Length: 146
Image (cartoon, rainbow, N blue to C red):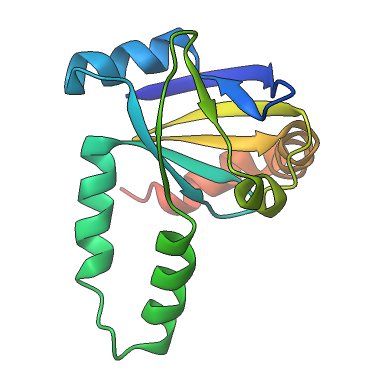
């Protein structure tokens, strides 16, 4: 599983170092450091292990193609997907269209969210965090109903 926050920066070739803990988790589970990267929600990118990607893919594939909302979501989610493998230095390449989607220029935050990693532009993450941290306890009370 993926946990924690890590500040990193893209290099001149749009490569991003994936934290060693994240790579080790995936390598131990899959035998290789391969991920799936796609458009996420709230303006970030989602990075999945192959195992988790297959789970998500199965769920979304089961959505009715007659539903306009399901079609819209699947089009954006899957058309944005890119299979990425870590190089010898533990870096992945972020495609230009995904950088544009997440408004990533150089500085990023990698945020472990249990089954996935979210990749945020540093400024957008700071804005999200500042706008939501004050309601953390209220949100917990609403969603964690006994």
